[in-house]
Image (cartoon, rainbow, N blue to C red; front, top):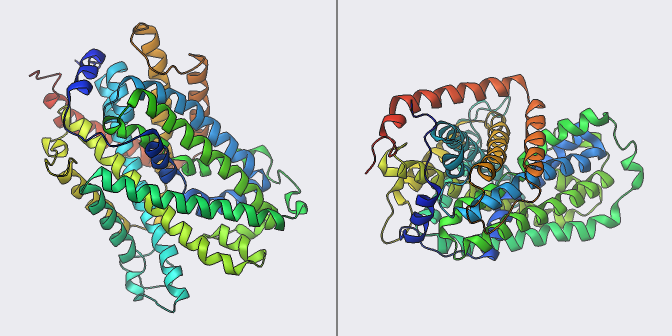
Amino acid sequence: MGLMRKKSVQGMLAFAQTSQGLRKELSAFDLTMLGIGAIIGTGIFVLTGTGATVAGPGLVLSFVIGALACGFAALCYAEFAAMLPISGSTYTYAYATLGELVAWIIGWDLMLEYLLASSAVSVGWSGYFQSLLAGFGITLPQALTAAAGAVPGKDTLFNLPAFCIAMIITGLLAFGIKESKRVNNIVVLIKVAVVVLFIAIGVWHVKPVNWSPALPYGFDGVFHGAAIVFFSFLGFDAVTCAAEEVKDPARDIPRGVIWSLAICSLLYVIVSAIMTGIVPYAQFAGIDHPVSLALQVAKLDWFAGFVDLGAILGMMTVILVMTYGQTRILLAMSRDGLLPKVFSDINPKYGTPYKATWMVGTVIALIAGFVPLHTLAELVNIGTLAAFSLIALAVIVLRKREPDLPRKFYCPAVPYVPALAILFCVFLMTQLSALTWAFFVGWLLIGLVVYFGYSRRNSLLHKPH
């Protein structure tokens, strides 16, 4: 049936060496900033409070578990990204190892992850932005502050700030990666400075009594917390989507992936420890600004404005990197014939998939404007965990099938490290709700209809040129 047909790794390497489509503008530093830009945002400014309500002070362990799951997966990503410096990330790697159908499923999963993550973070950005405006006595018409039904008891219709920030980021990406990376690098440095300043000031206000009991809900709470805060680590995989635009991918991509994840994991663990040391964990219930709450409890209200600004900037870079990753996944799938050609058209002036960027960005903006945040957040984690599991499996398969392929970076201790990645990710998937699983299965079924109705017969492997 051709469902397991694979792309030639040698052919992909030859394409990477001869392709002149996307401009090579990124260094290891840029990739690290790209990864930090994607990771530090909603997780540290919003989900730390949610995680604390289910894990208590054990939230620190929740972050460690999430970091381990991502760390093992990151080593697998780094091996593939250094070997196959082509846009498409996990989708591209699976096409070379596990076959077309599995690659399509992963690509379809990633569409869900990046679309909903970008939209969800846009909604989160809107909340902090409106809070900042309120500090200056500025309020928007109630109907334009949130999606319909997002705020009980309020007549809201459309989230205008969320729509606008998504469209602004889209325009920035459409006009060039060089310009985008400059904005991202500057903003990342600012928001990391805000987080480090919070650590430096907050540590003096910790009361160790707040860490007792350390595990009020036992390890079940820790594991549940890990499944929730896993969202905080999403984004390091988007670094590999930039492979085709990296000056020296074999050297720089592994560094960018590992450095960004290591820096963010360390910051998450320290911040969560300080927050739960300042504020008794039960007080985080229903709070969507946990860092600001910690500052208020510590009587550091003067610093709250800086945190709001850091949150706003932090979420902007998450939207930028997630939207960027979405367009590059679509570009790769379009090049292979699995999606229409419009998604892989490169604008000769800007060197970007201009049309696809505007199309994707508009969809993200509309979803952010019309769909409440709690609905958007349902599916993001499960699709990513599934993709991480499959890419870890792909490393094992390719090492066995083609052990002599040139590899510039080796995932250590294969098959044990990939097996640990699979074990951690599948375990975290089991901690998610039945409703999330039902939506996920529904999305996959829609994807299979698209694949068998369009993609399979239009695949370039089906109709070679």
